[in-house]
Length: 294
Image (tube, rainbow, N blue to C red; front, side, top):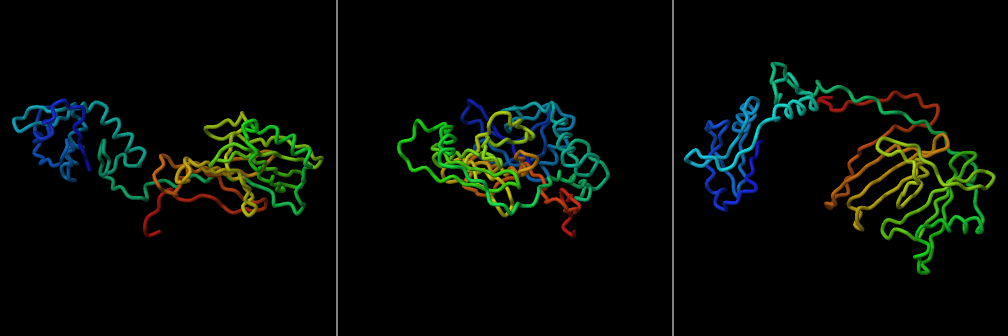
């Protein structure tokens, strides 16, 4: 469906005078309806605009005398429509916006989704996590970026989790964050030496700087380090990141985000890898879209 909006018009009565639509100065037999300068077109009228827009240069809202009330250029419209066709696999089909063809479009045209990259992780180690002494923890707590601003608040207890036979994850709470509590991740070797956790780069983030990961937690069942950054205190928006331990670093395998804050808890996945334990040889890959009969 096509909508046309009258914007930036100085004449407050212009919207009330809209009586029709013209393409390159030729009035179309299209009834218009709408209020406050917003014109809504039905399916037939919308198709007329799409057809005319492939070769036209200008579209205008006109009054009952055929005079332009407002107009917009259609230059570039066909290129835009062609891009939409390509993204929706409609090029050359009967539902193409830019250049319709005789081929019928249906979901079977959509190619299968490429298999997700597979990240292999080792099974959990039965060994208990390495535990640091209070003195060692005190040195690490000194790295808290908000320590100098803390006003005697009770610090949460550190958490220790076994990553593999030789490494332990330490999640150390800080005094930063409010409803986005900042926790510092460290990796401890069997000698008891702790270092800041390292992260593999991923598309859009080279992870060269120590990451600021709010509200960190460890999922023992999925063996993932999970960060939940709330966009506001209601937690109805923000970002969720999940990492697995592989080859001495944490690797992002799932990222979901929703903005702006709109009262919804349904996050939109934008990045995901498939995670398996070593020895799992299942095949990977699903269709991007499926027919209802599949």
